[in-house]
Image (cartoon, rainbow, N blue to C red; front, side, top):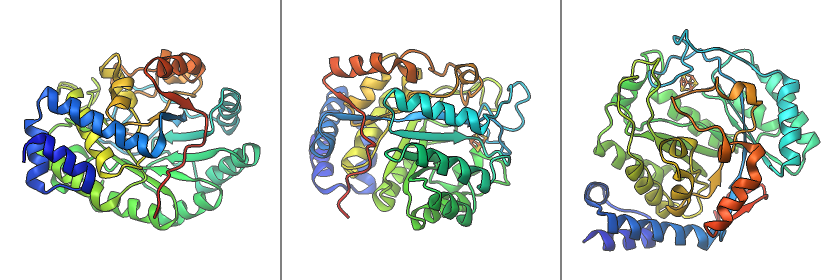
Length: 349
Ligand code: SF4
């Protein structure tokens, strides 16, 4: 099969063989990519129309007990100026976000022990009491199943936990020995069992990654069928062991976004900040390749610079929640509609 046929097949059957994925990822030409992105956009619009959902990202803490080799807020980075938002600050971000039209709040942070189950449950219930029409998404790393259960009962709706790589050996190259690949995958399973809409995700072009691993990522997405998937190009941070590595490819990231859309037409797929950081029109390119979620930054402006997982992160302009009108105009001029709905997955089980 040539690549056009492979893309048609993927759109119809939502699956390819290992060899076919490899073929598509390694031999796609610029024309094939255009065809692939169009097919992915059409698949997305069949489910969601022109709507692009926006979520308010609140980075609650850059303190983390872990030491992932690629991450700018890793424990060993002494150059990182640490902060932690208070409960009041988090609630104020939600208040401001609600006025700006946000109906999903994403609480993201490092694995910071200060945020106990009790504290998080209190914060989540307060958000849900004040804004009952809003969804709360958490992105707070690995916790116990009991913790996930309590946070869900307090009102959390969704949980993002990037698995970063599906290959256990590769996981070992990206993380210190104490971090276990099987635990990451068990967390994803636990989140699903607790009833969350679950998001996984991985970096494209992280050190040590090869095309065989990307093929396995796509096969994992086929099997796990996450409700959300965050993928973005790897971008090095200068104060990490990977500081001298080169960034991942935008073209390959877009190709993978489109494949994921064709595998799961109803998936919620963000055009990530990493994509926007590497390419000026990365957000729109991501959406044209099948993404349907954007996450402008709602964190207090004085901490935005401190939450740097990688260097040259975009956090101004279209990345800033306060500029949501600008974002709306940008979407409109590209033919999309920035939707103020909660934007839950529209999946027929
Ligand atoms: S990637 Fe996440 S878990 Fe790893 S060091 Fe960074 S914030 Fe912590």
